[in-house]
Length: 390
Image (cartoon, rainbow, N blue to C red; front, top):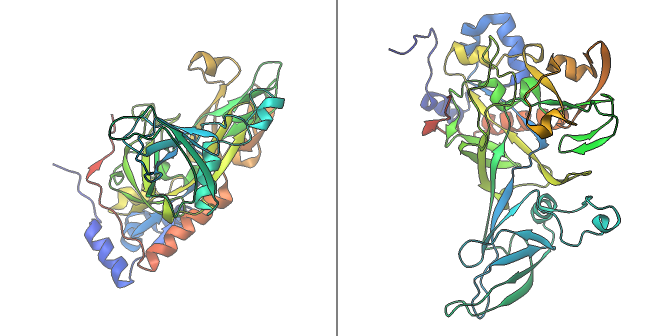
């Protein structure tokens, strides 16, 4: 038998409230005070939906693009957008451009080997910003697709179809990165100064989507989300989904754990929420705005969505030696309250913290999602199957 709750709601009941303009929606930050004042049971009676948000580099992102047929017809086997290569092992003129693909002739790389100013994330931003992108593609030619080479200019509007397809987004917690070596190193977690001169982290903490539903009780295949400034969907668990990692007493993982596979119509998205990123010494990435509405089905969900930064912990990891070797060693465990304060203490040393994620933008995501729901423009998507918990 399932657990019995004092408050029980259904997706259908909450969606009916949204359609009638009677829904009560608050952000995850606002929910903390409500649960503190009224307790989880009364909070669950009063609140129907809690919105979350995050905005940060999410390297495992990209887009499926159909560039349209040529005359004569072509089956592209190699495609470039502004000289950034896209994967073309698909049918006809379909391809996939990854956020971390880098420009073949980036002028910065010619001056500073390993440095890239432009890549797949920037191509995606340019497209959603309405800019013209130069496409060239090659083929070996077949009887049905005889053309060997095409070149043209495209815009997002002119593309046959464009789908943002991000295999791993919205990590449920993540490492705090430091560098214990004597040399500055450049990583996907940003520039790390020697001898633990800084500590970089990447999470919105108490606003972060999966930290507000630690056991994925409301998130799964078909969950409707805020993605890139438009409505998107959870397509399933993201790659490297590791829900079995150790958790605290409140169920929140103590290290990188669950992830989401997210998809949506790129043509409806905004450059405000899809930004190309250049990471020194690493390459290109894409900062993504993503938010999930958490339905308050019962008092358990009310309690989950009231999680505080001081109750969320992560591990401090050395990216100069341990991380590249795949060694799972924690130098310290710190809370997001400590991280957001600007300094943490490791081995008696005070270290300045640097966020890669934007709390300002995360709050805007959560507030925007709240407004969409209040205006009846966004209904909850009922998950057809929940994310795996083991």
